[in-house]
Length: 56
Image 1 (spheres, one colour):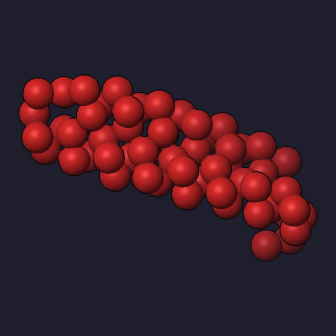
Image 2 (tube, rainbow, N blue to C red):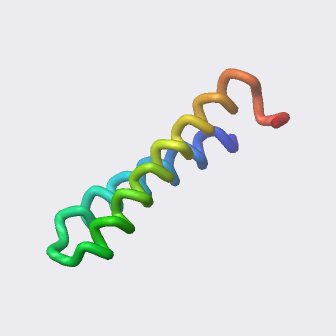
């Protein structure tokens, strides 16, 4: 079940990050890029958990 939660969190963070990157404020754009990268990492974590099981 943890894999699904990680994938959902990753999708949400990636979407929010992409939205923030559309801002005119350079600080918000940078924050959005970081948040998008975090989301992609969470999605990868979910995929790995799915392959290995929730024991990690």
